[in-house]
Image (cartoon, rainbow, N blue to C red):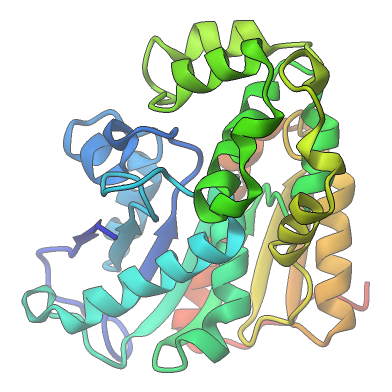
Length: 319
């Protein structure tokens, strides 16, 4: 696994140790050229201004490339447990790499939107068991694809169906026994060959979106993997909501999100609340997916700033 750690040059003058935000990026693509380390370095990363906002507050930021993105192997796109561990691992690496100056007991915040929302949510759930050494103070997760089966059913035959097929490649990479290839017809095999290295910011995304938009899963398969018990079991393993995050969570969701279904996100916050998590749930009425990211960012930053300042999170589970 690779990644990037950015530390402000100015000395930290706030309370306690300089905070560290470990950042789960949104969808970049499947190819190595999509790795955030590369897109940030070349100025082509669409979250660069958000990351700059965190840096302007004096926080250090660690951005994971996740598994198989910029390193050998296929990217495990939207496999929540893999992404969550990657977000926690880059935070550990940032603390242990002496040149960063980040304290081993620095307060840690977790942040991500869209694919990054999955990553942040899983990092929040796994933190207590997988990375108890990290001093996680809070998580801000937005546009969260919590239930990939529900998301896939929503994307099928829609304009953004390509994201569903990318997730199928990701699951096949994480769990080779799923054997995606055996379910594909000739159209599906061609789609896989054409898109295995695709990046969101490349011109190649246009034909990929066009060739999959408004088409059915059956246009690319002989049998739908989503109907298979082994695929369903792996999707269930990576469904968020089974464990309460140990630190407070801010969860944001655009009401009219055309990519991430509102209902499955609403279900996630209710399941976390039922398990005793401290959740602040906020919806954005006049927003779809992209606007939801823009509108929720200031609230997410304020939430993490309050956690770093030691302020208690009230939460609104009882509302």
